[in-house]
Length: 108
Image 1 (cartoon, one colour):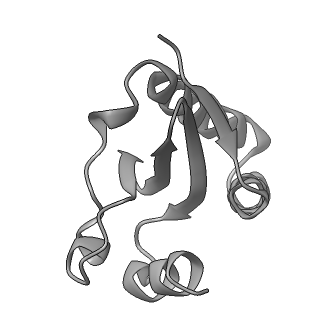
Image 2 (cartoon, one colour):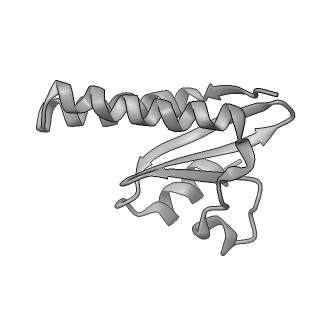
């Protein structure tokens, strides 16, 4: 069975910000290469959504409903809801991930 993979609005903004930064600071070709590799990870989630692990920053505070896959240095944070994979966050893992995850995923 294939799961439907949906990106939240904030995850789409994350992705666009990453690609804009790479395009402006490296090259548009490099940005397209990164996009291709992220899309491969997203497609793999449609077939194997449970393959990711719980982000350690969330496990520390007792939250285990989110999972992540990594394309270094980028981390794709998602949750599986019925037959859907909902991507909540795409971020450079060198950021302060604890603060980012708390702000984005644990706020009401």
